[in-house]
Image (spheres, helix red, strand yellow):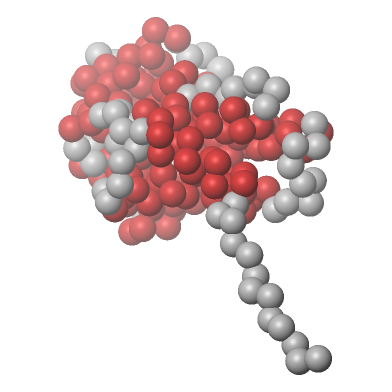
Length: 202
């Protein structure tokens, strides 16, 4: 992290924006493994060493570019009601991930299956910050006593986004507002399962 801070001290906001925009443009056209720092520099109109001065590899550039755009497109709501917060969050997430830029996420998941180093970087630089942001919604709800304070937050976070990610990857179901509403409703209210009452002999 100290290395990254050092690399970023003298950044030009104009050059940084050009680099991140160029990286996203390339990622919409081809997988990360087929993209080079040289190609990013060419698209951005900057020198290759400018990129290396700020990022140690193309993976860092790609993840920072994606994380920056998702932070603008998917805001963390704070309406005072956990169901509304999570529903709005999942709706906006579905809308983003269904877009051409959002589908880059699928690339990152695929890359993580074959590249352990990228997988670790993906978890640290993308998944962890996104999960921490969503965790604030759960923490606020716990303070308001809307949800059980003993809930396993890691598991709840998986349950919020897991169905969406599965549908994105498998392509077997739709991703729209109706589905988002239903997923959060089932998460918060359950599926109405009741254990059978076994009668005992008198």
